Image 1 (cartoon, rainbow, N blue to C red):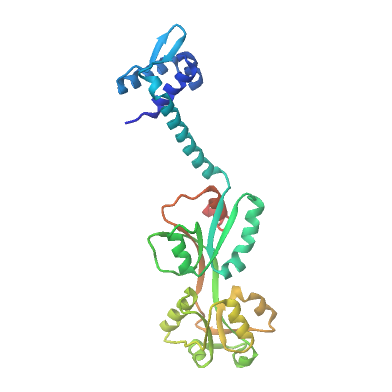
Image 2 (cartoon, rainbow, N blue to C red):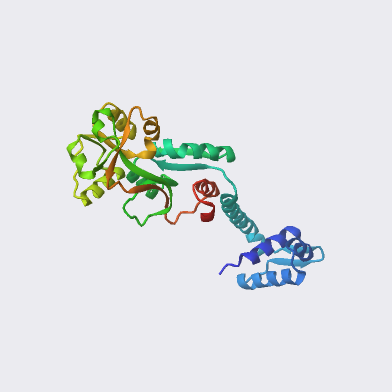
Length: 300
């Protein structure tokens, strides 16, 4: 087995040309240096130095033959260690972040600004897509961290580190459905109305479909949409009753001019946004500091 400490002592003696001086620079005793050289010579089966009145000289058929390779190998190891130390203590490089357009807009935008003020040297690569696609990007090393709509199917190649935002799904409508305002209606009552729902491949659509079917309710959307903004626009025009996280329609609902919340019994279950990381991949210092922005102090 290679003993790197022995080679480090050998290299230092070669540079210093003296056992005593090498010992001083290595902060060990002179006998320890001498013993290390003898041990390495025994392992290699050759004499590494000629001991002269001027000090320690590399032997022509021993130390002189290997010194360049040894020094280069030690330099490479030092470079590798320095890179790892840099990852642990310096916020540099690029963080590749995967999330949906809505999560970027309503949740991540302010965090990105906050982080940039603290670590201006770090760059961002924003990969906008639906949660299932973000999972695939994490698994194929195209993404460093993902913010996913939960729940998602378990996957052995990613880790959900924490939930960072709650999503309260609600139904929204405009004055065309005034009979539903300021009352609470059974969930199955909405089967009679035109519905605006997200595309069937999205986590949000699967969540409401599974919950409703568990209640014996089967929503058949009149219109399927690909974005929350489009759903809000159509709902404002009276095209149907939408289902959207309250957090994404807060401004319209607070203004109480264009849309109102349709209350149901039972109400829809709370979902969440979670941070996902690829399993078994080292986390850089820059990424670790970014993730800290989303955790409670007791979790860090």
